[in-house]
Image (cartoon, rainbow, N blue to C red):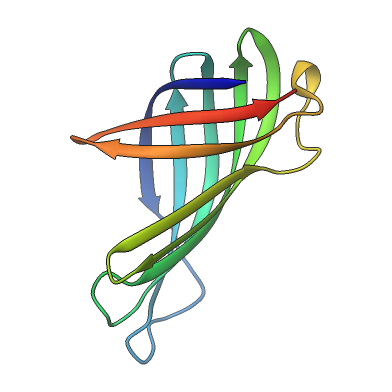
Length: 129
């Protein structure tokens, strides 16, 4: 199945334990999202990132727990993020963490694509249940 919709996101800096070194600038942030559409949910998560001394080169990983409804089925699940930017060319993978689905979302698997256009965020979620 595939569902699409928009989402709002808020990122807030959080205290980290690493410090900048040799042109590498690590960061830690909290994530809060509200999803609209067939995925009507909220999420909270944490992200670790690293910006390099080369403009446009960076990486991040994150985990977020999503709670709400997916096509009318209630429950929660976790998304794992893996993002890399290589001199401005980005690659982002978001996957449902295996066996993280609860309640009516037990057994959920899938991939999510995030689209940023004109200051808005949207998602395409391909999933199996």
